[in-house]
Structure formats: structure tokens, C-alpha cells
Length: 336
Image 1 (cartoon, rainbow, N blue to C red):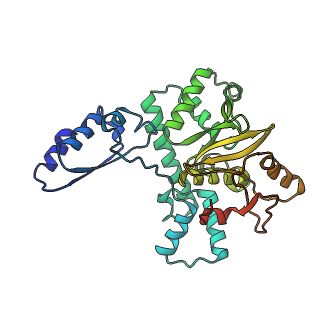
Image 2: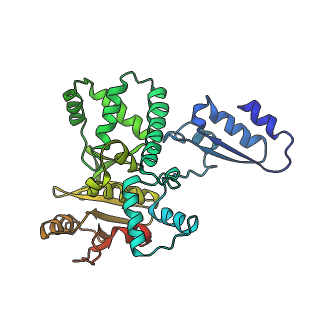
Image 3: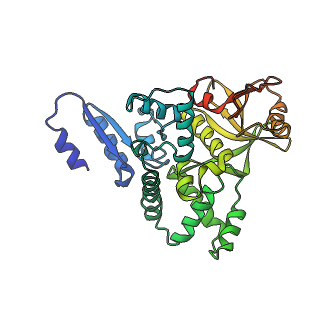
């Protein structure tokens, strides 16, 4: 790599712009990047599909001389902007809802936006999945039990938004005559999180103000994979909408945990350097029982930070200081 770069830049006058993709595949790339930085006037852009990219030696070599930017699939707002500006489609309420239901099904991978056929979209998602699982994980970590690993990933995708334990996944694999150990399961979970295929979310004791070491949850970086590999997302709207909200909070710069208070769960505690908010997510607040289930945990929280219940309901159901918001309004707005 050094020879190619130095040959390219030797005759350039002024600032040099260098762009490297999937650079983690190059041995000792950190030293090379640092040498370019100090050898000539340059702006360097480094991308990679692994969460450990900047937990490597580079962070030590360049100290605070870099900016780390997380890139996510398109948000719903970005998808509407694409269709409005590229396809010249005017957005009214019915059209926004139509695109939202498509977003629920297929997610936000940019390569899908130009595809009209449903099978083509599914095949595109399967291709992306294969590139992550085969190239980024199986090959890199030299996993031999390929079928066992794929069934493990299926279990994770089929359990998004559900509390997870290594015992439950071990029992699931045993039920399919695929024996494995808790150590292997621990490695597998680390691999899929490092690949950015999904995110691990820890539980936080709200009153004790500490993180809990068990019963974490997992959410997909793009919920379209669930549609392509598990089941139709329209059959699992509560969990898919919860996944959408989680990724949107990350996209907006929040760190997110699952809350736990008085044996009740708060879907998300979202924090940034200036604020903290509590969020419950429901598909519809269709009964008194559902309303009680979603609002009650938030009423138990003693601090004064804002609390929200997000659902597909259009009627404002705010009460007792807890704000209710339609999920589409949340995705398109900037209140949170």
C-alpha cells in the first residue's frame, strides 16, 4: 500500500486527499496512515465495517487528531428526501405512510432505493448479509461450524428487542442438534457486534444508576435483514418499530441502554452530553392495559428528565407529564 500511495502523491502540489475503504484488511495499516499524516500535507479518510477500527493502534498514534463518524443506513427522513429530490415525488400524508410501510419492510440500505421489484430488494439484502457473514466474520475469524454460526445469527435476528441469555441460545442450538459452549456463544456475539451487523444494548438499573451484567438486548443495524432472512416484518411490527427507534436514537448521537425500575422495563434510556430522555415504544395504544403497561414504568422514575411514549397512534395521548408522540412524527421531527 505504501508504494502505491507514495507513487501517486509524489508529483502532487498542495494538499493531498486520501480515501481508504475497508482498510482493516491491510496489515499494519495504522503505521502507514500515521506516516502519511506526518510526511505531507493531507486529509485522510478511512472507512471500515468493523467497530474495532478505531480502538486499534491508530487511536494511540494520532491521539486526538481524528474525527470518528458512525455511518448508518438511510433514515426514514433521508428516504423521503431521496424520493422527493431524485424521483420528484410530492409528499402528502398518504404517500409518507406508504413509504413508511415500505421502510418497515425493507429498511434503509441505500442500494435498495433504486430497485422496484420486491425479489430484487430481498436478493440485495441477502447479498449484503452474505458479505458481512462470510467475508467479515466467517473468514476473518476462521469459524468452522458455519451452519451453527448461521443458526446463531438467525436466533439473534428472530429475537430483536427481546432479553437475551447465553443459556437460551445454547438450548436453542442444542434443540437443533448443534452443540456449542457458552464461550463459543460469547465469541459469536462479539463477532456480530464488531461487524456492525447488530448492536448489543445493556440494561441499566435506573434507581441504582448502574449497568446490569445480564439480560442484554440486540438490535439490527438494518431491520431489512429480518424481512429477508426471518419473516415478513409486517407480522412483527412492535419489534421492528422498536428496532427503528433504537437505530434512530443512535443516528441522532445518543448512547442508549434499556432501563429497569421496580421490576418494570423502560425500553430506552437515551443520553447525550446535554440531556437524558426515557422512551417507551409501542405499536398501538389500543387498550387500557397497553396504556398502563407503557406509561406506568415512566411514572416510577423519580428524576425530571423528559419521558416519551412513541406509537403509531395519531391522537395525542400525553398524560401525567409524559409526552406521547406518533412514531412517524418522531422520525421526521427534531424534538427528541
